[in-house]
Amino acid sequence: MTRILKGTDSGDRCASMDCLIVTNQRDITSDYIVRELKRRGRSFFRLNTEIFPASELAFSLQDDTFDLRFGDNELRLSDVRSAYFRRPEIPALTSSPEEYREYRTNEWASALKSVYLYLGDRWFSHPSAILMAEDKPRQLRLAKSLGFAAPQTLVSNSFSEVRQFATGKTVIGKPLRQALVGSPDTEQVIYTTRLPEIAESDRQAISVVPAIYQTEIAKQRYLRVTVVGERVFAVAIDSQSRSETVTDWRRGSVPDLAHELVELPTDIEALCILLVQQLDLRFGAIDLVLDTEGRYWFLECNPNGQWAWIENRTGAPISSAIVDELERIGRI
Image 1 (cartoon, rainbow, N blue to C red):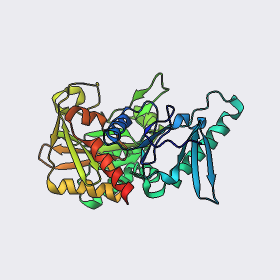
Image 2 (image 1 turned 180 degrees about the vertical axis):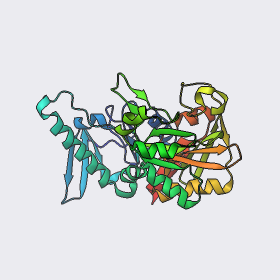
Image 3 (image 1 turned 90 degrees about the vertical axis):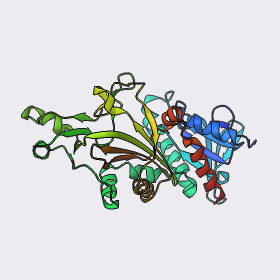
Image 4 (image 1 turned 90 degrees about the horizontal axis):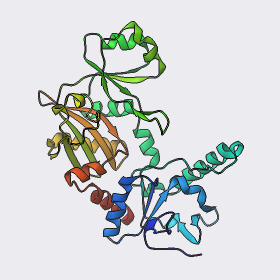
């Protein structure tokens, strides 16, 4: 059996032990990591999880080995020095008989979880830490305890609670977790939205699912802060220059909103690093707002957020910083 030591993508030829990238075939962000690894001459293996069922796997308790085989090529997980959990998808089994598909999908998903757990502390950010860090109430409680300013917040599906909370305030609403709804063909984004006065006619809509309701902060600037280890890349996005992007800069898909690399105050930068560390992560994409009086407010942290567009727009060397961390992990 051949073991290939040069880095490449799964589905092409199998690859290296220096770094395992777990993602999907359409993830452009991982391409930035691949490019940086190649530039440094590092070996890697890109595991696109939707094709995971095309592999053969073998875990041996006796030898404490876990091998993945793609054709004549083999990846031995015990030799992987670092791993990056990016955007895995559910293993695809479209050719399975319908009556067995759910069973096979669940079994392959379970095997994939075993891969994640076998790698232990070699992750850039561990998948279980990412999952736990996605919880918005936990983020807000932690941010407040560390000293961040945070908006008044209610998470609820109770009409009476939401109406009472919103009385006398300008309030925004946003999803508790999932911002995409619909099928892949009809997918829509639920944006952060300024809410009108809560009326009796809203009762049914509010009761359907819990959502996040917050007092709206009058913005001077919106900031996306990408934390990688102890490095911070803060970008101000000019959301207040267009009426459609005042509440949520993503609304309207305005391609020419100005992005500017900025320096955060030392104490705010330190809080961003500390928050990510307290979430047991090496990466965090933090949303901050600078209000009209010069105060910084914490909104949320995406523990596995997008960043390639920031590198592309501003030149911030985020992919290089991530590979620095992966190399550091590999030396531990």
